[in-house]
Amino acid sequence: MSDMTRTSPPDRDSRIDILVVDDERDFANGLVRLLTGRFGDLRVAAASSGREALERLTAKTVRVMITDLRMPEMNGLQLMAEALRIKPDLSMVVLSAYGTIETAVEALHAGAYDFLTKPIEPDQLFRVVTKGLERSQLIEENNRLRQIVGRQEVQEELVGEGPAMRSLRQTIAAVAQSDYAVLIRGESGTGKELVARLIHRAGARAARPFVTVNCPSIPENLLESELFGHVRGAFTGAERHHKGLFAAAHTGTIHLDEIGDISPAVQTKVLRCLQNGEIRPVGANASQTVDVRVISSTNRDLEAGLRGNIFREDLYYRLNVLSITLPPLRERAEDIPLLAHFFLRRSCREMGTGDKDLDPEVLRWMSTCSWPGNVRELQNFIRRMTVFGIGERLDMDLVRMVLGSEGSLHPVPAGTPKPVPMAYKEAKAEAVHAFTREYLTDLLTLTRGNVSEAARLSGLSRVAVQKILARMGEEAATFRSR
Image 1 (cartoon, rainbow, N blue to C red):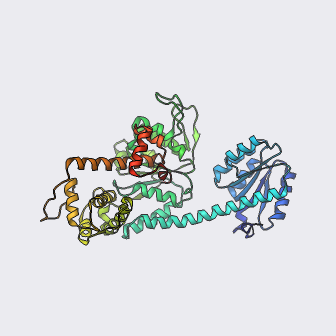
Image 2 (cartoon, rainbow, N blue to C red; image 1 turned 120 degrees about the vertical axis):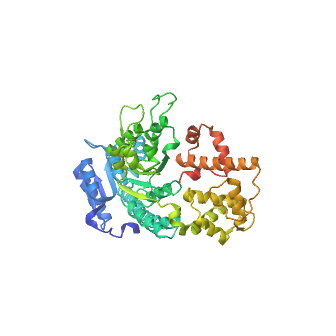
Image 3 (spheres, rainbow, N blue to C red; image 1 turned 135 degrees about the horizontal axis):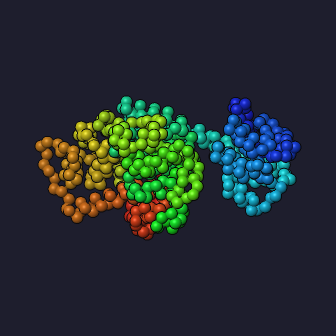
């Protein structure tokens, strides 16, 4: 017997290690006796119908479920679909007296962990159940480690040691433990998408999809289709079925960035989805169920939108169950030196250069700037300094050159000569390169590395997107885990 099945699980009353489901009670009880004799320290139970099995699954923590395929009212495939919706990580084993390759393939495609035929050979049964128990224990351990790593990632990626950031880390850790809707507020560049990702990664849905959509970046007449999908022929140009981002995020999390910018018509559709847990693709006759956690973010004053009747009050209260407000960089100036060093190290790695350092005078100057673009503006400024900095130390002379070349709103330190700007052609090439990289990064993050979808949204050809990726030194696969 595997070591993974020897240790009795904690809190036996709250869990069933192995649940056997078969409408033939004698057969089910016989399997229970067989499994109890082999795994005497584990809790084995039987259910005589799919409905009873689902009640057990809802009330208890089940590790492995063995179900017959041929049952009245609810067959094994239907039971499996419902069971995996309730507990996606459940190890499902299906069995049938009608064991065909087609049935096995159908069951495995539907989410079964393994497949057995009647009459059951005990040794094969024991092997399959042992592997299912091992899989269950590994998943439980991975979930535990993910929570620990999630807390560490919050510490590492939310750079800053001031009171505002300490409070934000605590808030994220608390919010991640629930499945309620979250509204993230903050000025542009404060890190709203990062916080949304951290909430997802520290929560119970961490292993499931995370889909983010920048609502204003999609034309209004296409946003409904992108969010909820469409069927073929729904409108001119709809040549194939498109399942939409809510469906892509099923069992996971969807991040609706800049939710305050969506039109009243789309607000109504989002509200219906949040109320009923259903979406209806454009042109479809029926709705489909989705299970997603919604995290929205905005830099707008939604309360002003309510007063002006441009944002629905009922949607506002659906989105604003839990709320997080991100502080602007000017309100946590004590974190600017730490952030500057963090971004400098990252920029050096991105460019493949040796490590560089910031002159203390540069850090003092940075700490006095207002940074209206917040963390994103600071990061971009550090990137420019890394590009144009020749030596290992980035000093105020370099700051003046970068400020002069970009027409920055930041004040140039008094008493310093203005630098000679770059030639027009070089400055234009640099601006185009920066725009292209940022645009394609956002686009491929949105499509999770799907080049064909990125090409469709951008209006570029698939080959053009691939060529830009090659010039960036990136691969589409790197965006699938972002």
